Image (cartoon, rainbow over the protein chains, first blue to last red):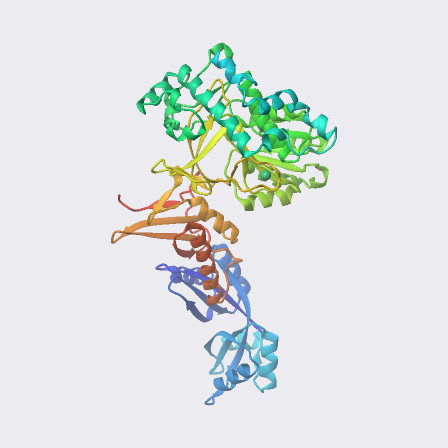
Length: 145
Length: 470
Ligand SMILES: [Zn+2]
């Protein structure tokens, strides 16, 4: 089970991030989670939104370079070491985590972590067999609203 | 008498063997050696595959005669040679070529219209002219012999592209003052192929004739070839055309464009080079190897010079091409600076021709930038970008900070190049930087920018912003 993440290329120039946010805001798209990976020369903005298709249409229409990537989201238990447990499972299975970021869910008063791995199916299986539940799109969007 | 000497095939004892073979048998080659209907390999094998020594000998004789002719007939040449303290007696062989002064495009413009004409007007049968976007045009003159020799050069190009008298040559270059149409038209006649003088434009009719008459060789500019290819695809008539080859010149084009046209039309695409000042298309032409153009050395002598110092550079160096006509009557041209940048090579060619080869044009001296002492051409950057799958829409920004040059190339990122992973984009960026470094000899700062963020201007795109104040 995966959810859709939208990535946007951000030039290293003043005001670029603002422009993207305004574009999404004007189209009435609510951001639920975001993270930025960057170098000195450019950045990649990653977004989780409730209506990915609409966001894709709006961003493409505004000439942004984007990609849609299926990523894994996992609900974090409110216990010490819960993230460590997840990373350990993946590491033991030799699965490299390209990046991860966390966001808070409004309703459940809990947190989710988004993982970017090469093979989502493999990572899901590893996590499930380790007793970690991978969240589906419905759960995430529900948790977000 | 001298004029006669220049035209006559056997006026010189030493050149006799080459000349005699050429004039008595040249046009019989295909019948005598290859028979009808069989593929020809060369139009004039005695010339195209001559030994280096024989060709050099012929070139020397013709060159010495040309200088004498130009000196006697054209006051401009007499004066420019006098300024260097030269008379025709100082020019004894091709080794003396570099003694002569250069001829610039401005010299040609200032000689408009009749200043460089070297024969009585009664001997001129044709003129052609450059398009001349600014200022005066250059008008070039031809005697009947000049036209025939030009036709020969173009016939060699058609044969090198796999043509024979059995082919249907479809000429979509413009006809008129422009040399493209008349040049390939003449070459096709000389070869004996059925010639379609289509001229440019009216794409629908071009494609209809192509289908109905079975055109096998297309001659036009590469951009028109790309347009025709696109139209052929759109109309879904690719299986109705019989094209096998294309001869595309008069414009710079890239290897990627070649592959694109070849794939779309199902042909082999060959480059051809020439300029009105020198004669027209056919100064050099590509062969089956498709790695550069063989210069018709029996008619033209080529040099590569450093565009700044004028110093002649050895074969294999990149520099400005300088051409000298060594068998033209009406409009002899001595050491013309073409402003085209390329490399000359004498490496043996798999096609069997021994003629000197010039590589793909790498730019114009007008476009050249000197950055940290290195010559950089925008076209080189374009080549790297196209090869790497990037958009050819780029911007070069040069500045001078603390007495040293800064050099930035902005490149538009394509959706295919984008990744949600920073590491992958950074890897592409380093790859691009490495290809730029190996192409240019210096490292630019490469900046990836969003698509369409580099301004597109009406008409000619702005590719270079040079902020240096020199
Ligand atoms: Zn060759």
